[in-house]
Length: 153
Image (cartoon, rainbow, N blue to C red; front, side, top):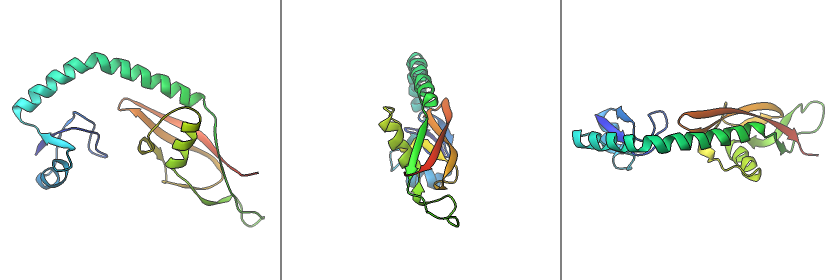
């Protein structure tokens, strides 16, 4: 079944992509959730016209995302967390650091990034140290941001 995505779908595609999925997935999930529409001949023509008109705007959006990426790379993010004390405890922290905490730290620095576009390998961090997160600002602009988890003083 060919569908046109109306929004970004994780592990499938981006908005306005024409994708092929199994009939059940399209009919029972994507279409009822209003995440996709059937890719008929007329819908494809409308999509082609919209993409043509949007090409110029897209260049400006990519330039804006690139500026935001440069601003994020210039930041030095340090997240604090309570850490276990003692020689045997090592560098374990209480709780964990997730993409929510990273999104909040970026928000405090004045940069708005939705938490679903931040990916930390492993999902969450449970130790002190240096880490890296992937941030997708646009379908063509993805950056790797370094940050550090330190113990509260």
